[in-house]
Figure (spheres, rainbow, N blue to C red):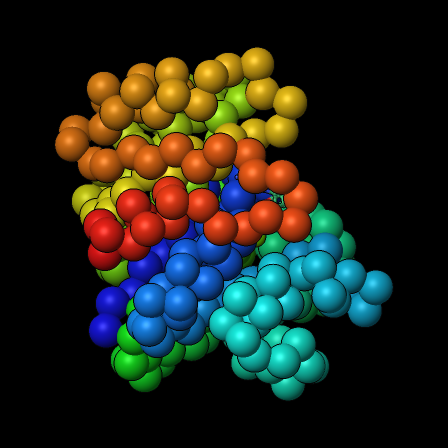
Length: 225
Ligand SMILES: Nc1ncnc2c1ncn2[C@@H]1O[C@H](COP(=O)(O)OP(=O)(O)OP(=O)(O)O)[C@@H](O)[C@H]1O
Ligand SMILES: [Mg+2]
């Protein structure tokens, strides 16, 4: 059993895309996989099929039903905002201890590979005093850091690494998921980040055309687990 926390420098970078690709790769290779997306914002009945939990359930070969979604994504909020703000809009809040307990139970119960996708970037607030960083530190499992390939992504990535190192979090791999309309060569971004990554493997995943979701990069990432 191994559990990984999938985090990122921000929202819309590729956490779910990378996690779903890895799950598909691992399942094809005969490995048991599970995934959680405990907190989702911007979630309502009109976006169920394209929501993060649905993408993950489909990769896992599970049905996209209300029960299945609730089982991997219990904290769902309508507003497409930071989760603490989205929760407040509904008169709700995220109970940090419950979130950690939910994650730990899944880690304990996992029989194969478990991926826990965070929400947004590494320091998105969860409540008045805790961010995703505190959630990751409480779980203390290795991270998969997914970053973009846009101009500026290198600095965002090195900033994130510095913060993660300060908290002594272990990073299993950095995945550069190429951004749309990028002006930057993916290989240049990968090589630049690798020069500052203290030996952490940096793997580039090109922007895949619509409908394509497998690529040799997933095998490369899985080989690091
Ligand atoms: N390498 C890639 N090739 C093709 N499409 C990609 C790639 N990486 C990400 N995408 C697409 O970009 C969009 C954002 O990616 P994704 O949903 O994985 O981001 P995220 O980091 O999980 O965002 P959130 O913070 O909302 O959870 C999605 O439509 C996804 O399919
Ligand atoms: Mg996502």
